[in-house]
Length: 196
Image 1 (cartoon, helix red, strand yellow):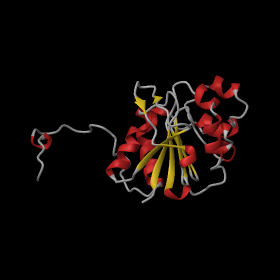
Image 2: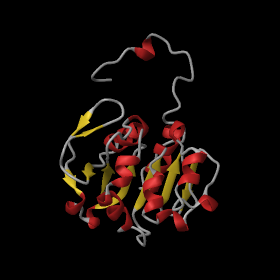
Image 3: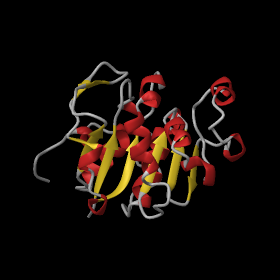
């Protein structure tokens, strides 16, 4: 099984990709965290993360997907040319899955990837109007959008995003795997043992 690349940048949102990364862990899919530098990066949730590798160390043949979490304030990530150059290198690559949630599609837009894809995002309309590189004509008003090798989602659809991306990389999981508590449980059902 090929690995997953998680791309991080200042003020990225761990919560929006945590269901997906948990699925990958459960199915033994290795994850490598990439960034424009090896310096620690602060997430929007208050964690400091040290990337495993820089974009220069990315070996395309080892990966089948790139995961892009949302961003609280995207301006610093958008202004980092290394982020855009890395993404631009996948403009014509139809085999790698690009999974982008919440506001992170703005990075894909700047890299030109959204010019040929339908997508959804959590960007405010005023932001879309502000940046002429965002292709408004390709926006789909849905929680999740799958268009070829691109999976995008609005931030609140993080569970559905996880399922769609997992399926795209060949993981067979149920649509409602992260649905939450759906019934009343007995005490016996909630008593766990190492061996059954």
